[in-house]
Image (tube, rainbow, N blue to C red; front, side):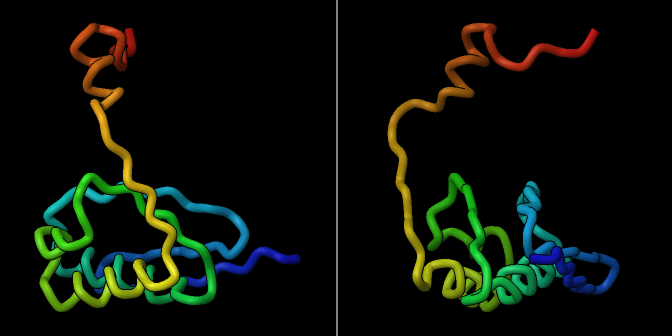
Length: 108
């Protein structure tokens, strides 16, 4: 099986989707309109063709805080269709490590 790349361009943003390799990315909110459209196009390109994993501390109903409501609705609709949702509860391990001094240490 060969690796194929699909490039999606939205304004000044370019998203490369590799069909064999996962490509992790981080999203900081709120998104610019350009980035929101890029995220939607990324999810849409994978919709019913490829698996996509999303980790968020936001409930899907809160995605309209990240991007315009119409894009949020369409993105969440594609993400949730056929989705397996894993909800975690409890204290944040990262927060616990950070408050006890066991978190990320600066490079020296």
